[in-house]
Structure formats: C-alpha cells, structure tokens
Image 1: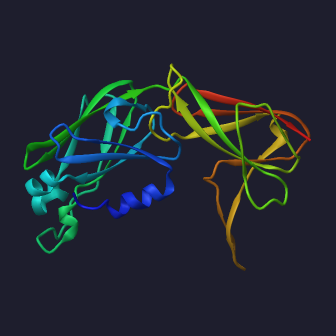
Image 2: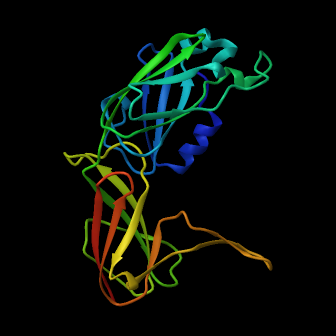
Length: 255
C-alpha cells in the first residue's frame, strides 16, 4: 500500500486520534482524523456526528493500486441514500498520465449528513463499483467539554480535569474543545462547530489571537475557541452545537 497521502499526514499532525476501515471490497482505506480521543477506532463500528462536514482521507490498498493504475484520481464517490446527505470531492488532474504521480492517488472527500442512520459511500471507476463503505451517523445528545486555562502572564495552558466547577483567577484565558456524546455517553466520531455563551455575559470577552503586527495592520486569527474572564464572581459557560440540540455547561468561580 502506498504511504499516507501528504494531505492526510498534514491533517493527522493537527489531530490526536483517528478511525480507519477498509472498504468492503478491500481496495481502499478510509481514515477520519479527530482533535479528540475516540471511543471507537473502526469506522464501520462507530457512529459519526450529524450536521457537520467530515473530511475523509483515502488511500489505495495493494489490490486497489493494481486495479486503478494511473486512473485512481478519476474515482468518483456517490452516497446512498442521497436525501439528507451532501458529498464533495476534488476533480481529477488535467494532466493525469503515467508520468503524473498524483494520478495514482484516489481523491479524498467531504460528507455532511443531516439525519441519523446508515449511509453507503460508493467509489466508482470507469462507471463500475470500485469499493464501498457503510458509515453510521447519529445525533449527539450532549457535549463533553475539554478545557484548558492559562493564568495571567503564564506561558502555557493547563488542562482542567473533570466536569467542574472550577476556580480561576481574574484575567485567565480559557480554551475549550467540544466533544459530541451519544445517548449512551460514548464519544461520536467527527469534529463539530459550536458557539459559546456566558452568564453573566459581561464577565467574559472572546480572545483575539494576534498572529503578526506590522506598521500597516494587526493580523489576527479568531477561529480558535477561547475567552478571557474579566470580572470576579460565578460564571456559567455554555457551549452549543450549531447544528444539533446538544450543549455542554461548566461553572467557574472567578477570583
């Protein structure tokens, strides 16, 4: 089997865990990278979270390489059922051929599913089934919050174990990662997007991450999920899934 794709290696460097499975015909391997540790590492035995786009890295097994040859980049994916599912992939290289190494690599794909259930992703080459995999999706019941705090002037974040409540110093920075949980409490597969709110709202401010300063501008990065505690007292932080009715809450006492 060919070494992991460069894009998949880059993605893996940003995550901490992964789930993998071969297709039913044994010609392709499908991998999902996660920012949090997974309860299940076999894609076909796990449930993926609904409502959020999930990125799958794909590579060929030895049998798949023999069959696809220099046409691997022309593989196309379809999902069944189509209702409630959205799938996208990059197109094939324009200059595919025997001198083009990229032509020997299958495309990766992204999929978003709105309704829970089983969905079959089929890979097709030359109009025929090349391989397929069945993925199960579920709606999260709640969110587990992975939390880190950096005290004023500290150089590093420290993890906060447990569900709280926690006591922090005024001026501390909180970073958070939402983890979707199923009805049985197991972690679902797939990263999610979520929003944060606080009660009272005036007790926190979202953090702006400064990347670079020059004489013309300040370049910032707002995607990281973090905030500052700016007033003493009790603060309830709530994280809400943007696509599902799942929330996570934690109480802080700011001193």
